[in-house]
Length: 461
Image 1 (cartoon, helix red, strand yellow):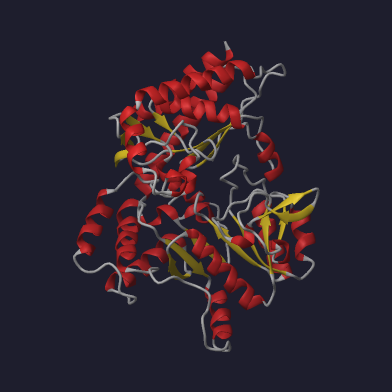
Image 2 (cartoon, helix red, strand yellow):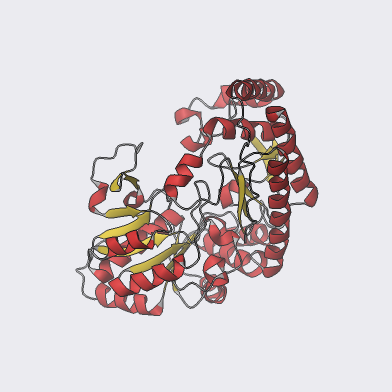
């Protein structure tokens, strides 16, 4: 699923900090001078927004000010100044199949005439249930609006059916803004993750953090009898990508059963692997399955699946609890617009043929980037999971979240991201993730590789 990292020479060069800073300054000036219309629009309309943007993380791009997008279509963006940009961010997976896939756009238009939200199922819901089981397996399903919501629901269900309080997560993980997962490891101890806004409760009362790929630490945590569930991605993402070592997932499944904890797989990013996700490609058997972002082609939607056994356990629990609020679900979850987009995506967009195109394109991208890294004799590596590719500014492969954190090179990454954007290529701002969609062209991939090479040539000569 990923190319082996090329062995770096023992005397691999390091980027000169002064040259890197000078390059970043030139690229920032180039971006700003080229976009007077964007700057004028932001000056006119950004003031009513907190931090000047609808969501604060829209400020996390390394450019002097954010892009203002005029149009997003296929795997291309057009900004307010008319620049056309090859989009390898694709909404950080939300638009993994390209912007506004035609079947989804048609379904939205059709559903808009029939109602957008009703708090009741339409016929489409029955079709979507069958499609979900066909694609991902015989789970029993619920619809949420985001993967964050679905993960929260999964944890409530796990705690309900096990009667236990804690969730086990891996150091450096990301499962949306679920409060329970915002913990980290510090010298072997679980602590609240630094930087949380307004955090006043002790998160370590409900969570324990261990390192990815460390089955001994997993068993030690499970042996306390306090862990209701293990919540994990099959591959750690939203950090420097960490791949599972051989036997790790089999070990997780064995240990979770041995100690009575449920296994929850969050495939919101690793859906890049195959039509049924990483779990189907690699024959994993989770108790609960979570998927969000791209599952409805860009319309906000997520799904939560429970095995029949867990669903039966939850039904027994649900029949005994006092009446009242469950603490799960939101009013707009499961609305007809979501379900129409889900049906179109599952039936016509998330196809084996689409994944075959994505796989070929991502392989071309990973090999191209790897060749550039080798040509410049850098001790970096390339990681790939299906359509998802990352360049990592450190040797690899990485084994855990601590190594992933140490592998981050913020100044280098920011300069590279901005340099790529000025050369017409957009990648995710939070890390070095690139996605290849079914509509990404070979020439777009080759332009990204060429831009990457041009920048590293300047920085290493």
